[in-house]
Image 1: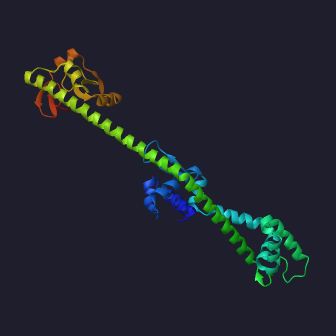
Image 2: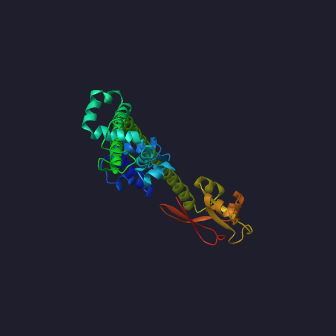
Length: 317
């Protein structure tokens, strides 16, 4: 598959909404993932796409206007060049191509004079001028034909030259890709290694978090069992050691009245305080007067009750 074809497939895929490398690759008829990744890097370097995000999977986006224009029409450069050539084509140059390629005698003369080695364009003009000074069977390029040939032959010849130019550009781009391939491959390996290191760090952090939670749950169970077995009321020290749960005085309520207090986590307290439903945590002396007690002890939770609470509070370890 030619480079420009792969470029078109990738850009069109991004245009339709595929923005990760895996999604783009799976949406196009192309099987070599390594070459696909190389082309993706080249498209970034050439300004067709940008890569967004700090970690994988990265998201790719078309640049504006270049990337979007080429996604809609991958052949836009060729069409612009064709139009430029046709708008600026020199009639003498057109005649030069026609004369040299279609007149065997003049072509042999051009070879003998080493025109090809010294510059086809300048030598060719001389040949055309020489041809104009002699009787000839063909008329001006402004007329309808050359020896019965339609003027569209000029366009065909120019398009042939353009095709050869495009092929040379494509060949050079492939050579460039081959030169860049070791560098890009190294970049891909580094990205893969970075992804592996990030995954390893995440696993370590998750394991550490799980271990910390397990230790906290064990500590909470021992603390709650001691109060449960002793059948004593909970204290301010109990809630500090338990962590993240507080008896809260509700807004608009009077201390020690029924329904005046709830046990909330730090996050719940902050949210209710912003809504002006919660006033402040109870002081240690007030906690004792509310007679909080553990009425049920399980492996992973406790149930706390008080005659001043509207309903029991289940606290998960």
